[in-house]
Image 1 (cartoon, helix red, strand yellow):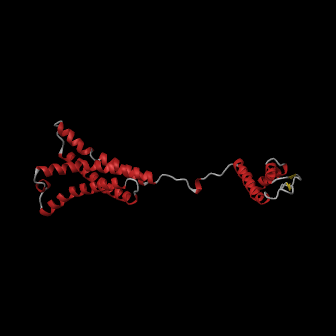
Image 2 (cartoon, rainbow, N blue to C red; image 1 turned 30 degrees about the vertical axis):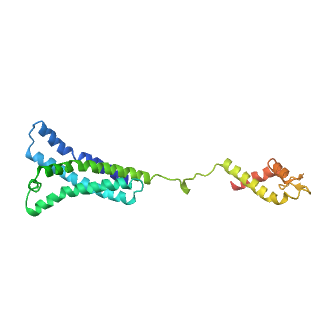
Length: 224
């Protein structure tokens, strides 16, 4: 499974993990009794989903943060919030287990109980938002760039035109030493037999010289 797909899966699970608690909350709001076995089953599903989402999202964010370039600061902030949320949810449970006390006794004040409840309810949404930000970061960093293997070969007409252009450049380079000696006539270098009074006139003739065209046609046929 690709890295971006893992982020989508964790974000989707972070949203769906609240479904069991929403079912219980809505039934309680409508004063509909729920059997104890059903309540225990739904809460167990929610607890397992919370553990998977927070740990998996924490790992995915940390892995993305290690290679992030564009939104590194935002990802670091979200990752710290997820770390603090998961730690704040676990620490009271560990303290209660060491002292043999239930959670509501560890969270003695009503303010602490509300804070713990808010963290338990919103940690999933923060994890989902962080995973989607990490997916966007990976999409940006993995965007394809034009490499040497992506360059398509030039068509035959373009390659022929480049051959003519390179031949003309060679002709210009070879004609530069002769530009100063305009006293003697210059023969056509393609071998058609015509002579010219200047290098510029000879170069202009090469564009339409039948012997030159025949040579280029023969070279292209040999190359193919």
